[in-house]
Image (cartoon, rainbow, N blue to C red; front, side):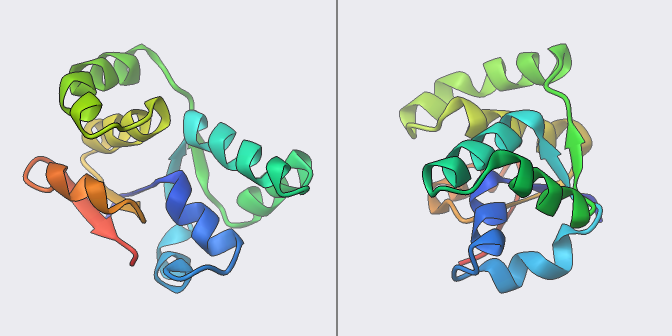
Length: 126
């Protein structure tokens, strides 16, 4: 099974939040968009954790970081009308686009993503 992990799910794991225990068995070999990595690093920095330390933790988890490329940009742009109605961020669209491209299960803590369940395999962690 191919897994794409959203920043909300990775943060739940890193901060031992509810749902992190669901992410743990799925994380090794999972893919994370570079856009979502930026979001994780930013949110950790706001909590006073150095981005370099967080990056090392992510690397130790064997998470594959996928560059945000033209194919993802096109897929993300196609999601924009629906995503805008749900107030999804650019990072959230990037994650969904990567999941679509990889035909992957997308792991997230964001319940609003259930609106995409007919088009994507959305796995809620809580």
